[in-house]
Amino acid sequence: MKNDIKNAPIGVFDSGIGGLTVAKELITALPGEDIIYLGDTARVPYGTKSGRTVIAYSHSNTEFLISKGIKLLVVACNTASSVSLPSLNSEFDIPVIGVIEPGAKKAVSVTKAGKIGVIGTPSTINSSAYKKAIEELNPSIEVISKPCPLFVPLADEGWTEGELVERIAEEYLSSIKDTGIDVLVLGCTHYPLLKHTIQKVMGEKITLVDSAKETAMEIKQALIRENLLNENSSSSNKEFYLTDVSDTFLSVAGRFLGEDIKKIEMVDIIGTTKVPSP
Amino acid sequence: MKNDIKNAPIGVFDSGIGGLTVAKELITALPGEDIIYLGDTARVPYGTKSGRTVIAYSHSNTEFLISKGIKLLVVACNTASSVSLPSLNSEFDIPVIGVIEPGAKKAVSVTKAGKIGVIGTPSTINSSAYKKAIEELNPSIEVISKPCPLFVPLADEGWTEGELVERIAEEYLSSIKDTGIDVLVLGCTHYPLLKHTIQKVMGEKITLVDSAKETAMEIKQALIRENLLNENSSSSNKEFYLTDVSDTFLSVAGRFLGEDIKKIEMVDIIGTTKVPSP
Image (cartoon, rainbow over all chains, first blue to last red; front, side, top):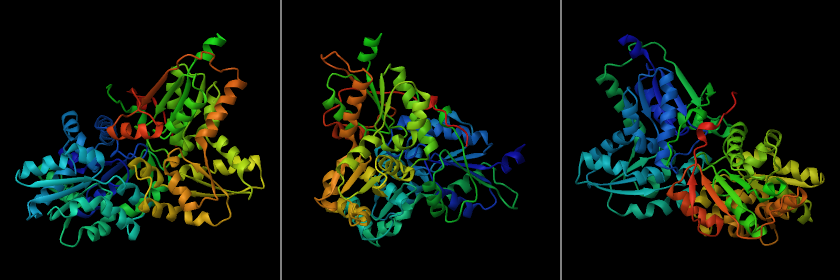
C-alpha cells in the first residue's frame, strides 16, 4: 500500500497557467515524479476576487486532483496560497504545500538590510500572507508591500520587455525602490516572466526571489520527510487539465512551461463548486 | 396578467461591472422601469475565455434573472452578446437584447467613408460578431478589427488618462488609425472609460460609437413594440447583484454607474452552472 502511495502523482493547481512555472521547476527537481496539473482558466484571475470565493475555488480544484489519486498537493498560486491554506489543511488529509512560505524563507535568508519588498496581486498583498510568514521567521525584519495589478495582464499579453513595460513597472515600483530593501519577492507566478524588466527598474543590487524554485525544493524535502518519494526512476507521466481551453491560454502555456504541452484536457468542475452564503 | 408583465423588471447581466454603463443609460432613457443587474464578478473576465464557457456562464446568469421575474433580458457584455445570443434566444422565452446590433447600426448610420473600425476583447473580435452585424446591414462596408486586451485591466486599475495610457493605446491603435476608417466602435463596455484617451490617439475626425446609449434606445423600442412599457411613472426599483463582492469591485462600480450604489447583494450561481462536455 505504501508503495502505491509513493507512486501516486503530485497534484498542482493554479488559477490559470502561471503555476506552470512551479510545475517546470518541479519537473527539474524531481524528474521521476508523476505530475497532474490543473489550471482554473475558466475562473482566472483569482488575484482580484474575494478570499471567500478563492477558498471555494481552491476546494473544488483540490477535490478534482484528489479524485485523481494524488499523494501531495501543491498550491502553485500565490493568491490561493495566501488565503486557502489553513482551510485546505483542515479539510483534506494529504500534505499541502503553498508558495508563500518557501518564498518567505528564501527572502529572509538572503536579506542583509533586514528590509524585504513584496509585490503581488491585490488579494495576495491585502492578505498580508508574506508579511506574516516573514515576521514569523524573523520579527525584526521590515516588510514593504505593493500590489501590481497590471503585471498579470501584461505577462498574458506577452508584453514582458521594452520601454513601455519599463514605464509601467516604474509606475508601480518607484515607491518601494528607495526604501532600503535589498530583496524583492515576486509574489505571483506570472511575475517571473517580467523578471528582466523588474530587475532593470529595481537595479542590480536588489535580489529578486522567485517562489517557484524554492517551492520545488520544499516539495522535495516534504516527500523525503513523509517517505513519499517515487522510487521508480523510469519515465514519468505528466497530465495537464484546464477548466477552459482557449487559443490564448494554449499559446501562453508553452511560454510558462518552457516547452510545448502535448496534450491538455478540459474538465468541468464549475458545477461542483459551492460558495458558502455570506 | 399583461399589466403584471409590464410592471416586471428589466434584467441586465454583464461579466462584471462594465455593464453598469448600459444600466446607467437605461436608467436615463427609461426612468420608470425597474432594473435588476447581475455582474458575474466571480468569473470575470469573459473576453479571454472560450465561447463554450461564456455561453454556459450566460445561461446561468439568465436563469438567475428569470427566477427574479424579468420581462426582458439585456446582455450588457460585448463578449457574451457576441457568442451567446442565438443560444439564449432559443432557450428562453423572453425578448433578449444584446449590445452588438445597436452598436453596429449606429456605426453604419454614421460612416461616410464606408470603413468602420471595431475594437474589443480577443473573444469579441475573434467571434467577428460586429463584422457580421455590420455586413448584414450593408455588405459594401469594410470592417477593420483589433483586439485590445489591456484596455479592460487598465480601466479596472483606474488608469484611464495620461501619457502612459496614451502610449499603450497608440501601441494598439496605430495599425487601424491610418486605414481610412471614420468610425470606431468601442466594442467593450469598459472602453468608454478610456474614451478621452482613445479619441486623442485616433484624432478628432474619428467618431467613437459607444454601444451603451444605442442599446438603451433599442431596449426602449423593443418595450414599445412588445407592449411591455412600465406604465407606473412613480419611483422605480433598482437591484444590484454580484457573484463575488470584493473591495476592488465596489470602488470601481461607482465610477461606471456614475453614482454610488447603495446596496449590492452577493449571490451564488456558480454551483448551478453546467458546462457541456467537450
